[in-house]
Length: 292
Image (cartoon, rainbow, N blue to C red; front, side, top):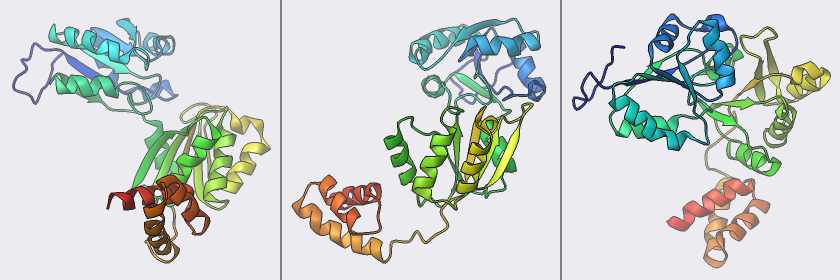
């Protein structure tokens, strides 16, 4: 394959690593360029070869398929480097969508980039972008949060950190945790935060729900089928006043006094009890003040 490089130290004989996006459901979303690239490379790496082989068979692509996942990614870096140095062209795909987005690959790309190998993107489907495009929630600024932690306590802490985030937040979730995650969002964000849920995007039973967190919770419980599949949650950002005034300013003054006498964690705990700050907000503020 023809390769391109912005690094003058590499010759055109070096191979190229292609990061190739694949369909998130509907196989017709595969681009012509993706098919051409996967058909031409010397080796294809995929997170789960059992899933990827179905896609490759559909497009009659028979190139060698090798597993690359969280458990072997770092060990595979040298293998990639040697093959690329030999002039081999390689491709990385994920189970579905754009590789590296909540999937393995960033360590590989980072290390090969440091070694100045050719790395090119073959863009295409992404569940996150697809959901944002139909959510009806502001898309000028957003954060991608991936999957929330499995344990309830850590899940709540993660959401508390985003409580007053003014930008749209995007989360991925699976069928066995979708209800628990929405309940955690309600506990932290309140009932009336605006949210959109995209279920089974581009697949036969694709659905989009738009409403409040409370309405979404009711919708999920109303029909067990609503809890099946893969989900993208697009939640509106915090609409209140995020400036450091009023009780927050009082908390800062209180923490300045407390951290002179007490450990940071204890000082933050006390400040949270007598102010409008959450424990996480008080702790982060205490850490910042301690450095001053």
